[in-house]
Length: 304
Length: 246
Ligand SMILES: Cc1cc2nc3c(=O)[nH]c(=O)nc-3n(C[C@H](O)[C@H](O)[C@H](O)COP(=O)(O)OP(=O)(O)OC[C@H]3O[C@@H](n4cnc5c(N)ncnc54)[C@H](O)[C@@H]3O)c2cc1C
Ligand SMILES: Cc1cc2nc3c(=O)[nH]c(=O)nc-3n(C[C@H](O)[C@H](O)[C@H](O)COP(=O)(O)O)c2cc1C
Ligand code: FES
Image 1 (cartoon, rainbow over the protein chains, first blue to last red):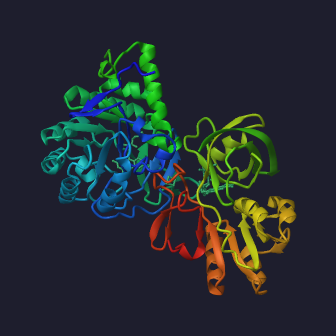
Image 2 (cartoon, each protein chain N blue to C red):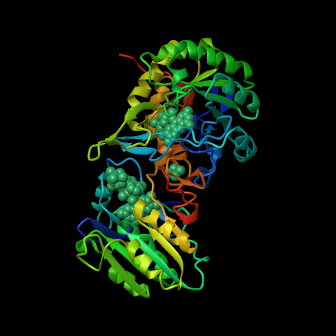
Image 3 (cartoon, helix red, strand yellow):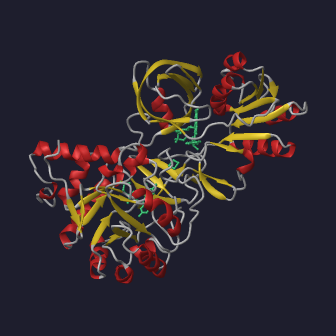
């Protein structure tokens, strides 16, 4: 059925198709693999890994907002050792690439995680943009000089290509994008969640126990598309675009804006088979448009 | 698993509570839940307990709370619903012991207990705000050896809390297990009571959910000092293992 060429390349790593899972929305793949074969995906990007286990924030950690989700999970994960011993072996059973998203609280922690991951994974995604932790996270991600420094130091320890995941909570995303490039990033991914807040007007209390959280889902898609386009205009690095993708046409929109691959996040939370469905819809879109290869779609936006 | 299910029966149990029967091909266990897409304009699914299952027909009941349950209630017989499930870990009926099992439900917490009461012999203690909110009394009477109703305002049955009724009932020493679902303060008190008396107790907890399948880590509760996922490690937990001190 597939006469369309879906393969894309991120910093020399070939993905069989441009559909990736967005970190934190499919755990480490165990659960969604009961809904479809993960080998259908271009890559699986796992939940942020920290050196030691992290318990995360108090609940409630989620709220629904117009066409979106606010979350404040706070990087709950079982730590690097657990990942290496358990999750990784399971993911290797699938014919897909593995992206390890790392989210240390300090530069040193990120360096250590990257070093110990070695070439056990295909790509490393450095999360400098998590809005749900006090230290690290977004503190790195909004300051171009910090982004450059952390990228440089982590890149030094990486045996596989490094993706830097950018925060949208900045005035000008092209500055942090360029800083990551100068630091030696091999690819960029964007966007992480936008900081938001929801208040219950009956009790005057914020709905999230953490008061604020990260906004994702279709509500943020236009912002994400705009940022992908801006970053594509100012760097030649491959981009993994994400933010509110729930259909094949949404995926196409990011690719037209300049993304090489796309990540599906919140859609997985609503529909565990979203990744597979979006891949099939993107294929249908390309067929309908008579485009033989998905890479021919990249950056084809006709600016007015 | 994901199912597209036809609604074959819709009834209204009281002012704000609806009862649906849908075609459903997976056999669930008591205490498991389904995760339902509610309709246009509502992004996330909503978790609802399985109230009954019989030969391909699944029953669930829900109170209209906010936008999600409001949209869900707008559906009619013949409409299709996108349902994930059955999900989660249900009640452990193997440890209920030789004596009487008691189910304790508060408000919308009564629904999973009906399915359980059809599987094991139980007595029921059900609490409601007021007489007009009392629902499913006949259903429980048809499957339980006794049904005690309590209302907050005393307009029907016992005037007071289900936990008071439970305490009284436990004075006869024949009860060997308690299964409960309801508001947090009620469950906290039931944990205390059953722990003091050394009675096996399971609680079905509620938490705001995202994926419902264990992938997103948003639905946690504290259990033995660490965060566990209500959708995957629960919703039913051994009362002893739940930490309420938050
Ligand atoms: C495992 C499980 C089983 C459930 N079974 C049933 C059932 O059988 N029948 C039923 O009527 N309800 C049940 N609930 C609660 C039901 O999921 C919520 O009432 C519903 O999600 C509210 O959605 P909404 O959009 O209508 O309201 P929202 O606008 O989202 O919220 C309205 C109010 O409901 C509360 N609420 C929202 N989500 C939840 C939640 N997941 N758990 C607890 N409180 C919540 C909020 O605090 C708020 O005050 C269950 C919840 C869980 C976790
Ligand atoms: C519940 C949830 C948890 C997330 N956890 C992480 C995480 O651990 N690390 C990370 O880099 N991004 C995390 N994200 C952000 C997503 O990877 C993605 O960047 C963002 O949600 C935008 O995409 P979407 O709109 O498709 O969800 C999380 C998002 C959600 C909704
Ligand atoms: S709701 Fe996603 S892990 Fe429980």
